[in-house]
Image (cartoon, rainbow, N blue to C red; front, side, top):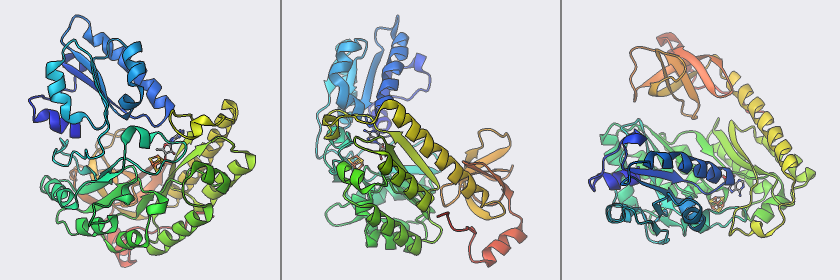
Length: 435
Ligand code: 5AD
Ligand code: SF4
């Protein structure tokens, strides 16, 4: 959205038809190896669109550009340009000047925040707002600090203006983004204060953020979450491993016990909060006992959902200098085990919601059922229901009739059901999570 915003103000228009485009730009992520492999394949496909159209420019943006520029330029001669995450500002100039002449700008700039560039929104109900960029944590498995550079926050005043503008445009839900979003600090305003100020903005109904780091989840941030009625009862809290030995080698900066206490504090402050996580299996040196500890923590916390990865070596990182000791087959086995566990946990948690009523913020038509709408509950669960009156941006009370591991299937609640739910003091009635 930032790139489109910037190009849009410099005479470029967006097309969704690759065959009609003069500029083909792939935005990329370097964090895991398989994302990188997919981009290489996609570049090959897109390069065919250049046949017979010598002025078409094909390039890549983002942190993978930062990472593999040399390999890309050598191996993929049809790539015309590579712009790293801090070089988007130069895109219009580079695109105009460099036809037929490959260019590369991957310099990192510790001050670049794009604070003055208004992102091009697609008029959606949800607006993403980058509040900080980069990361200073240097977890030993992670390439992000090397390809996105140093941690820096955008000024709170500019961010609050951005959110007010979003509200005026009809955006109802704002999602703050950052690699370690809760490390936000612009010199005067910290993350908790930013949440409180955003909570005061009229027209915004829901506030979310991703991804926080457990070590930066301060009592002040938890209190702000609990006290701001617009901050949703939902948190993505990457744990990475349930073994202290592995966490120490990952240099995550917390122990399993500290993480457990954090979960307790969150659940006490925000009853029924939905928690999700990231987990890596097969980190160097992870033995059967370490892995069992991760499974045990997953069972104990009972995450609503989880992103589960097998470890892959990323260049420049500390861990890439260690032996990638867990065999691929064993990594695959461990990954399947945690996926199966999470699917079962998610399905059970969703099924427990049958019969409950939720406020669903409508986003648009449901993908699989015509005449149905889809949206999210405050806990970030996807809900679908039939309706020919509700519009995107409306909040509809939905009673859950059925549930899969990933979707709640319901119908608009009758006034009576809604009153009963309201009378019980909550629009969502949730049983405790397992463990
Ligand atoms: N291998 C596997 N997963 C990784 N992640 C980051 N680096 C790696 C890696 N080298 C995962 C982490 C992070 C998520 C965004 O990607 O779980 O939280
Ligand atoms: Fe990577 Fe997140 Fe660790 Fe930063 S905090 S190094 S982005 S895993």
